[in-house]
Structures are given as C-alpha cells and as structure tokens.
Length: 370
Image (cartoon, rainbow, N blue to C red; front, side):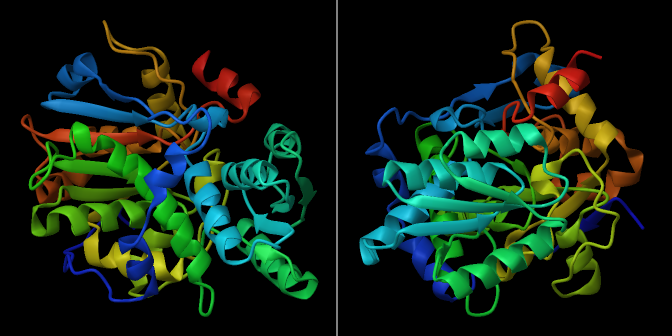
C-alpha cells in the first residue's frame, strides 16, 4: 500500500451542528480572558526553507501553551466553559486520553474547582500520567487501546452521570466535540495579523498531523470558511501503524486503523476517525501521508538542532509529525504525484505545527541527543 493518498475535495462544508457551532465560536475572546494568555509564536525558519529549497517555512509553536506543552488545552478549556455556561452545577468531568487532551481537561476543570477523572490506554507513559495527576485529576490506566478506552469512558460517564468531554464524535455525541473543535480555532485566528490575511492567505500549503481528526478538521474548516476555493492545500500526516484517516479514505468510509498501533507518536495513536471531523476532512483535505517513527525522530532532531540563525524548537514525538510529512513529500520520489498535486515547489510557502513540546522528557532526551 502506498504511503500517501490524494484527495480531490469538494471544498463545501457540511451543513450540520458542528458547522453551526464553529461558525458561532467565540474561542479567542474566551481564551484572552484567561490569566497568562498569550499567542503562541509563529516562527519563520529561513535557513531550513533554503535547505528544503522552498520559499518560506512557517512553524506555529504550541510547545508552551498555558505552560502545558500542547495546544490541546485550547479545545478542552473552551468546551468546559461552554458546558458550565449551560450547566453550572456540573461537578465531574471525564475523558479518555493519550496524554495532552487529558492534561488540558484537568487544567480546565481545576480552574473552575471541578473534579476530573481521566482514563488512559495501556501504553501511556508514567510521565504523561503524572502530568495529569499533578493538575488534580484522578487517572486510571486501562489494559485497552485508545479506541476502547474512549468507549469505556463514554459508558462509565453515562452510568455515573459524569460529563464526558471527548475530542472525538459519534452518533448522538457531537455537541461537545464541536465545542472542542471551536476552541482549536484560536490558534488559526491568532495568525490573522500575519499569514492568514483577509481574502488571500500568505500560504500555499498546510501540513498538519492527524489523530482522530478533530484538530485537522478545525484547520480545514477555518481555511475553507475564510477563503473558500482560495484556501491553501491541506495535507494530513499519520503514523504508519495507526492511520485511521488514511485507511478510511482507502475504504471510502470511517474505519479503525488496521496497523499494529505501535508508534512513539502517542498523541496520534488513535482509533476510528471522529464522525463530524471525517465529514469535514473528506470535503477539504487534499491528501494524507503516512510516516514512520524513524522519520519523525529525524524531524525532532532538525527542530532541536537548527540551521544557522533559525530558532531551536522543542518538539515531541507527535509535535514533529507535520515537519516529517513535509520532509517525506520533498525527498521521497514515491510521493512525486502528491507533491505535484499540491504544487510543492521552490515558490511554496508552507505552514507546519509543533503540536507539543517534550511531554515525555525521558523519551525526548533519548531521541534528540542520539
């Protein structure tokens, strides 16, 4: 099976509840009210651009959002605010997570003096679990993969009357994931005074990593809603052994990943794509790339050991996946058809995201120092 899929999107957003919630999002107004809010930096890596022989390479660096090492708190915090606006007596929040989403939800619940219960899959590292418990949440590790952990969290939340805040949607569970996706809009809006200009972006290609799909779907929604047919080309990146969106494209319907689910990219090691996210992705995504652990390790090292005057980027295993996808598209001749499809050439202006910092310090050190 090829390492990429080309998609020819309709560029027409679905008319559903998720679309309506995103249209009415007030996420950046909310996030600006939080103490210590500041925009995450947008860096231009000029030396790396020259090395890659492209016009510009931008990196939106989410490694220190609210001191939590990940962008995920944008979604969880906004969802909690919307839930409490409607139901202020909500006392216990619950979720399943591979780390970053759970940490963001724990931080958000603690802000409102609410309890938080987090279930994590069997492969979650001790350091990622500790980061969640340090924020006051109760964490329980299950002998399950991510997808089954999500199902368990949903079932017990219903049984115990806890409020489930999950960043993936399914039939009859779409409102809260839409709030989460709305929260993610903040960091795209933050770039409106730089590259996301009105009418026409100063961008040609966005390469963004993909787990269950809620975050890349919010990216696609933002660019489609803002620019329509003038949106940049958008490519999704997934681990080879956990590529639910890639395989859903291949099968023509949402399916669970068929790989062995073994990857260092724990934040992307997810299950079946989110229902509402899939509807946006298939309408606005231009392709998907699969990457290996060794390819993302190379990208982490390139961020950590910058060329010339480029800034050093602290990027975790999932955080560097977008850059790994770009490197693969540029260097692997097997991806030439995809490269031509998105017009990746010497004039291209490319945006990638560092979605997390060193969320597991031990793993990070072993990779970048070797």
